[in-house]
Amino acid sequence: MKHIRVNVVGYDDSTRADTTDRVEGIRRELEGQGWAQMVTVKQAEDSEDVAVFVKMADDNSIDGVVVTVINTSKREVVFVNLVGNIKPEQVALIGKKFNIEPLSHLSGKLNRKSV
Image (tube, rainbow, N blue to C red):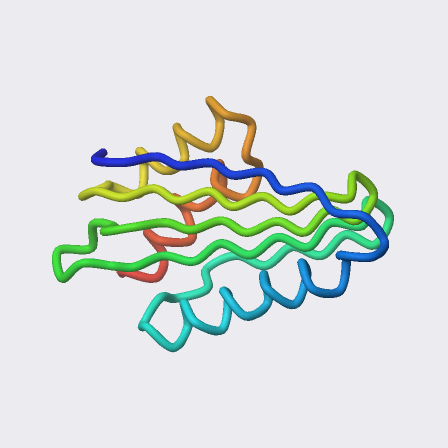
């Protein structure tokens, strides 16, 4: 692991649209740069919108992971960026350690994709 960055940005009613539009723009940029969206979670009851993107290397390891979360009930967005040559099992361990639910299940999805 070379780098882990977590950013949490709060917003209010006046900045909500701009903030969520920016997250959607970042998601489109990632897809345009070859990142694969591996997990999408939308929970209406918690007002959460989570997307996990992965940049795969030729050897089925992971070069990077980006997690974006829009949480309207808490009025915040979260960005998590992991950089390095990462094995899928390591991503699941990081998810469990930092209580990032979508990451804790990512290992199985990556392993099924690479078979």
